[in-house]
Image (tube, rainbow, N blue to C red; front, side, top):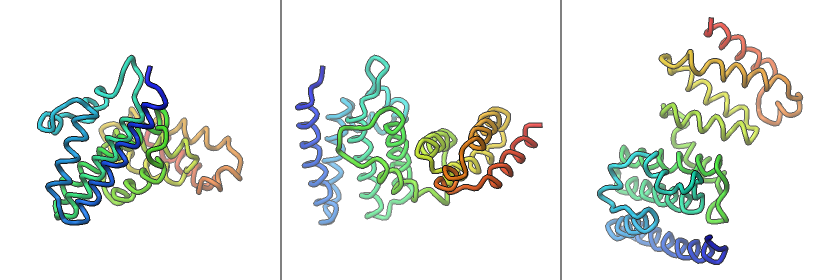
Length: 219
């Protein structure tokens, strides 16, 4: 069983590496920063950089899952490395590739939030909010919309849940599958107090309008 001392050493080592990566990026030493990122990912995941670039998100998550349990501490480090790699590419004006890395980082941070918080390397809410802003005006994959839906519902941020619902409703091919869940969500929301709804940035009238709209789409 991994001990608390092990996690503290791992976190401290990663903080040193992250600091070095930021130093190289700020100094314009992009190759040096990239090498550190790739070395760190290989150490955390046990996969060479060339092969890792060919793996999808689910495959990476499986590398960090043991006996059905996700390792949130290592995943947090992996997510931060991908975020920094995205920053590195933006600094070099390679924005399309950076977006893919930001999306992977966001996905991993959302997975952490739904599977158990890490022991203190990062502030999950700050990281998710920062990455979310990068995609707030762009289309994101359906699986990420579901994660965002669950995350903001858990936080009680119903206004942002509404944004994810808008994105999901654009996925016309999957409407029959997703509508029952959205209708159930609106129904549960209507049972909450006006105070809770106001704190979540949504009104009862808006919820009822959303429920009416989705119910009509289901027919």
